[in-house]
Length: 254
Length: 266
Image 1: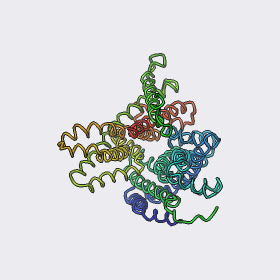
Image 2: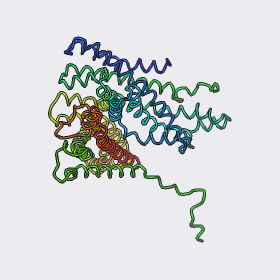
Image 3: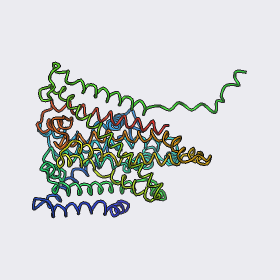
Image 4: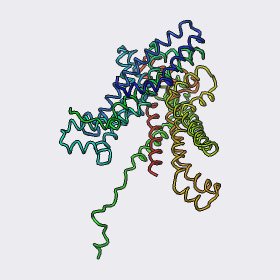
């Protein structure tokens, strides 16, 4: 694992791991069910398996589409990028989760639909942030200096885009991942509840429906910790990718 | 001599910046106003007498549900905007009275809370507490930290403005500075920050209602109808409330974006 990601994860220990541990401990102490702590641990794993791949795939595809919308706005990829960037508020994660639940009731497979539903808000958020960042990286302003220098040195356009422009578009996306993480977490809770998946969100909703604060509050605390962990991962990847953090590294060719 | 009156060709006038944010905000306001009017007129749609949600066709039922969603969102947004602005003003006041450390801590708490999944508090409150006003308060609390963070940023920018330094250097008493300069220049940025609460509370309430833990069924909500239709696997009942909810969320986000874009430009 890259060193900046490890550093961010270590920094996030108090805000991520401690709430999760506190949630599991609290549910062992106060929850009405005898195996509530183990159920919460399993639920956290299910929620992580739902959110992490969706966030990774959605953010990667959204960043590529948003960046391509700045490079070639009238191409098919560019149109998809512009569509994703504009459609963000129309497609909240919980509404897409409800669409996925409706399709599952009609006979579709749950897992790919669930991941797709959770990855679309992340893709929209990434496209919305990547497009203006790529515009700036390719533009005439001060942020376009690296690209102008690379072109002036005679590098081919593909290398310029891949090694100099794209990292500048990815960095703000990873910095703004917090909103996508929150949307994915809310969407995961809705999806688990609507599809009866054994995730932490479904545990919280079931406890809230039963009026059991002792069952619901520890799960909420643990989900807060999981959110902080995903945020820290995003910031670590940003530190790893951001060209400003390794500008002294010599270029070693494609 | 007319040619000497022309501006030199090497210094063309800067082009008028596009007003995309304003147009977006205006279209969002128009869509939201149209939705509110349609929801208010919904009881007239089914023979002029059918006001019961379950008896109506899916479109009329969705419009009837919109009355609950939109009125609750408006109430919670006013509460959340007020709480967030109050939080930012409290931080500024603490900075004046107790030093910048207290101010930084107060607003850092808002930043940290904005990173937590506060929307999950709304279904929790819906299951554990009964009254609607308490649910509105919890929903408002989910939006308040983000509003506070933005309002405090605007407040800090204003406090560093040169015209305030000039007014103080000219010997104007603090009360006059507050009355003549601070309050008139602060109203618009704080309102712009407060508008940010509207899409957040609408989304939070719809999410809670979708899980069956939001507004009571008697009030009606788009989220509750969407959740029920998804559980029953009924696409005809699902489509109208889902589309209206998506449209209302887009309009609320467009208004917030437009107001903030206008604020940044000014």
